[in-house]
Structure formats: structure tokens, C-alpha cells
Length: 326
Image (cartoon, rainbow, N blue to C red):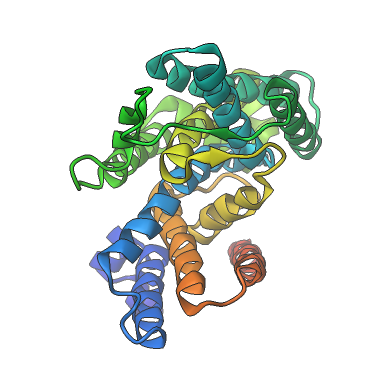
């Protein structure tokens, strides 16, 4: 095994990424065989990608937070809050679609700044902050929309505004995956090639040592949550582009799936170690699992069970790896 790890190709790509890609391919083959080829259709692949888009943006955002040693369990409800507030502004107040999309992102940024400020400047534990934000997001969205669900316009809607669906598909081209990968590249550069990324990772490794070295740790920690909130606002746009109708009070499930994608991809729950490319592959695995369970006609709650098991296994592997290194 050690010789295998020393292989130049494996060292460059990373053993974890190779394993994840292998798992992704094997899952596709197994689901295709179990459904007698029913999983091979292009529609199934496009449905999987639709699910992966918004989940990918959530996972990319929370990767920055986890890298600092924090956590954010509010990303799912905040995503729903963004889409509900922005959608209600469009349907009830006649706000132009372009402005509605900006509102979605701004609501996400607001929650990111709120969470980051409490964690960085007030020293409130991230778990408590995220639990509070989850409830605030659910309550604020329900109050703003008067507990009504919001339906975003179809592509051919007479009222206009359906053009926003081009963010996932334009003339048959899956634009969403191009945008997701482009954003992932930007996130990878920010996290691995900039001063901001180095400080964020250092916060997760040894926050006190970074503080004693004279770094303004509060600024960088808050920035990580702000980036997360921004990507959550973008995720809301991709969610409604794929699923149209949003109901208040939901979104919790996507917290676990996004975090599962991060941890599976190599991001350590203890902080200090993160992999953007691993996160993207992890999200694709979660999305394929969701589509595979649907194709098999199994109870969708099995996805929750399997996702929970994946999180436990991934965290356990991370703990064992850190113990071995220490």
C-alpha cells in the first residue's frame, strides 16, 4: 500500500479522489445493473445533475466553514429562506426576475455575515449559532410568505421570468455543471493559493497559534461564513430552477447531505484540512445515491439512512487517520 501511495500519479491526484471516483463509477454500474439498464438514460443523468447543482453549492460553502473547525447546520433552511423570500418578491410584489435572483444571494450573504459575526466576534459556539439561524430562517421565511408555498415561473411562463432556468440548462446544454465546476475551481484557488485560504485552514489546525502570530483571526473566520452564505444564496437559485415550488419550514435534509459530501471528499470535521475537488465528487455520489434509490423504487428514507452511515464512516476514517499521524 505504501508503494502504491508513492506512485507519482497517485500522489498528484490523491488516493482519496481516486477511491471516490472509483466508488462513483461502481455505483453507476450497480444501479444500471439493478434497474436492468433503466439507470442509463440521459434523463436520469440530467436529474442527478439537477440534484447535484444546488447541493454542490451548499457543500462548497460549508467546506470553508468546516475548514475553520466550525460547522453550519443552517444551510438547508437558509437556502429555502432565500428562495422563498426572493420568489415571493417576484410573485407578489412584481420585482423583476434579475433583482429577485440578487435578493436570493443577498439573503444568503446576510445569514453568512450574521453567523460569522456571532462565531468570530461574540465567540458563540458554531453549533449554537447554526441551530439558531436554522430556526430564524424557517420562521422568517414563513412570516414573510404568510406560510404560503412559492412557485417560481416555468420557462414558458406568460408572466416572463422563466429565463432564469437557463442557469441549469440552455438549449439542451447542462450549463449548471459548467458553472458548478467553474465555481469549484475558484473556491479551490481561494482555499489553496491565497492568503485568505491559508489562514482559514490554519484556523482549523491551531486557532490559538494563528492568533498569537498576530493574525486577525476574527476577520478571516467571519469571511469563511460569509462565503458560505453567498454560495447558499446561489444554491437557492439552482434549487428553484430544478424543482420550482418551495415550501416554508423545510431544508434540514440538505444540511446532512452537503456535510456528508464534504466529509466524504476529504474535509476534516476537526478543521485544517479541506478538499474542494473531493467535495464535488462527494456531492455527485450523494446525488447518484438519491437517483439510484428512486430508480429502484425503494423508500426514499433509505437515502437518509445511507447518508448517515456515510457520515459516520467518513468521520471515523478521519479520526483514525489523525490518530495514526499523531
